Image (cartoon, rainbow, N blue to C red; front, side, top):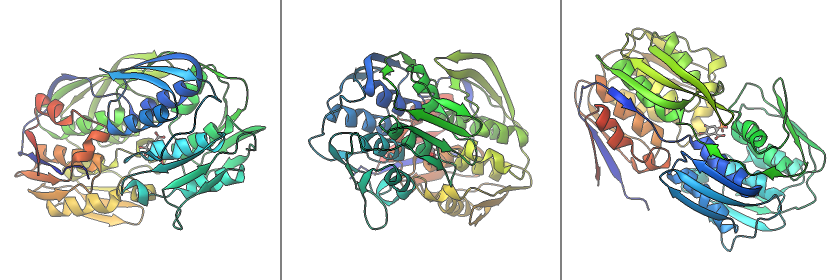
Length: 439
Ligand code: S3P
């Protein structure tokens, strides 16, 4: 069992200064996966040393890949080529990480060995049929529980996978990436069509490893076609981690904060669009391209936010940022309505229910709906809320204290380590009155 960590956040304060938040989680996972199956040595800088990306790193070490680091965000991966992975000696434990499990299940489906993927209680409750169903259409053999959840036993089908064309019923970058990775091992073409744009880091990074990916409209496809060639990867800061500070500095009076080197891939910037629609004061500067991913410095100053109907086309582009956007909505004038976001119910926690429960404890008028939430902005009170082991819920409620009338205590915060290990230190340096203790 992980120890139980409790955050205590005193009311008030503001956010000032300059900071670099940790590396992008999605890109960190993919750097290990693609670096491992490439030919040659890949150097990664800015790697996120959080539990989720480390779970991926350990899985590839368990499959015989020599990986040095991480050391201050630097990782060196001695790639073994597409067919060089070895059978792991035991089940691979992936902790809280849905990205590890879903992407790995695709990559492992075409190996010449069997493997078992396990996770913590939250990951073991999350739906895996969304990947195992299309993978079995490709000829993969994967056993799960009756409910379609982990542990997954992947019976490697080297040489026997067949490419398919898959029309994804949900907008999911994890499903898309899983199938593209399986496609590297399948005969013929594997193509995936998405109902709405989702993060395209896999497609961009495959191209960075000199591997051809066809992209046309809302479809991405690969063929088994040669090899990945090692490259160097500079991981930008994670906009999903920056999001807590985008909201914090917007809602706390007299804030002026600059976040450096943040990834602004257009499939990830929904949080900026939503906040700007609410009236936030956010400026991007120094925009540049780093290894195929756009980055920028982001300056945020306090602003008076107003409630909005969040456009559904922004939902997939801000999918991980809704917990903290709900806090922004609680501080906005008027009503904010989110619809079309049912996926939030199957994230690390049921983020609709857990956020609504916590906001209600804090006296906010937050009404959960099947696929979203209706929040009427007002005064945030004080109280004790539970994050349900969900890192983003914990950090979102911490930011709420910038505008609360009294102290907010947040239980079950150990999983902040999955994506933002130095959150408490960084947030305190920038002005949040937060302490953390083992309980
Ligand atoms: C991720 C995709 C998203 C996101 C998750 C990371 C990825 O999940 O919520 O945190 O790295 O591909 P879905 O693709 O299931 O929406």
